[in-house]
Image 1 (cartoon, one colour):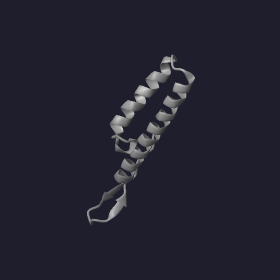
Image 2: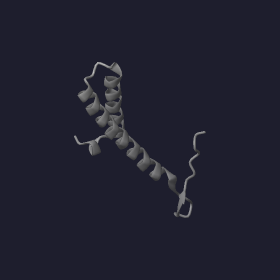
Image 3: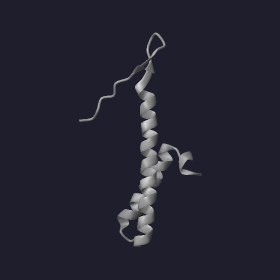
Image 4: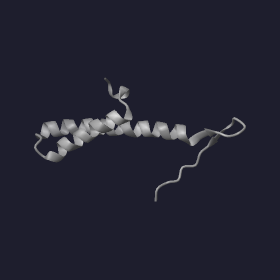
Length: 76
């Protein structure tokens, strides 16, 4: 399964596994770098998927069938 075929949940699970491996500290440097690169790819994939969902959520149909923006409240 390629990264693009992963669901958000699958990518998050893999990212959590990478973080756990790196947090142990018992990983050789070369392997840690590889894990870090994998983690960055998974992080970008998750961010991209969230952005896609946000784009879909910000556009909704109003009563006349026209598209209108849906305001999202930013966290403070």
